[in-house]
Image 1 (cartoon, rainbow, N blue to C red):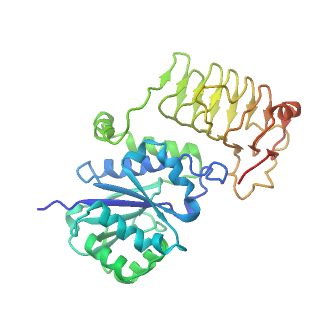
Image 2: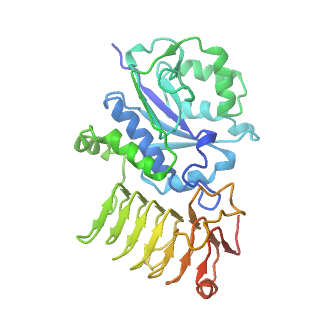
Image 3: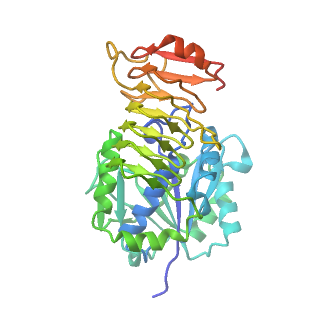
Length: 379
């Protein structure tokens, strides 16, 4: 039987855009890991032979900063970004998809899969079932509220894009709801209720626990650029965490995402936190339930001073009123390119962002729970 090639087009559904700290100040800086897990999970559960031949990710106009973050990450080698704008006729959904098909020279008999990039929902399907023009994958037996996946043959998709002005991915789904008559049930589907960073990490450990990791690494090495090694010292302790490349870890890390080129020095403790690239954490720092933004730091200067404590309740565990709609429950946020002096105590659900005068911050000594300290903020 002739092999049907598959092109994967992912997008971020509305209900996922603020999970785990997708705020304006650190817009989607850890989305590449999110996408990596999505793609790796799909390919792994489809036993490699069902791997996708092309990858693309739809970015809507008001989330264009995603593309800048993805360019600096490993996924950029295999993922093409499709920028869509409902107000720009050249960049509406139908125009962008048409141009992508033609530029990638995707054959008429190949198939596209449009899927929400949900790290809490992965699935397998039988490629041999695909014979008609278009299908929905029906997850109702596994997860009632799951957004359906669309499988559509290239010639059908191209005809739609040439004949109709479809503005967005949501409009495409609405149109296809009236067009698609056939459904495919997934062979296996995994659904995880993820509300915290710890649950997110545990879920992926569960997915990968029965996988031959050596073969998985060999399979995906071709997708990744050559990167610097991560050094885990003898005194380090790492539990249930993701560590990126180019890191040096000498302290304790638990239930956390540590991104590329992060240094964590002796006696530092990181728990339940997201540390973005370029951060250098000094000795004796204690961090819990924090999101620390990326830092352009080629000289590896310390960005969080020694013996700083953040994310632990100081007084009354108050909520942050100013950023209550943007800040994930219980988290403290440190914005991009923010230096923190040593010896400062920062409580729970605090926000520090902008071009901070570290002398003023040091004079404060404490930022109580729910507090905000920002200067010269550029949105």
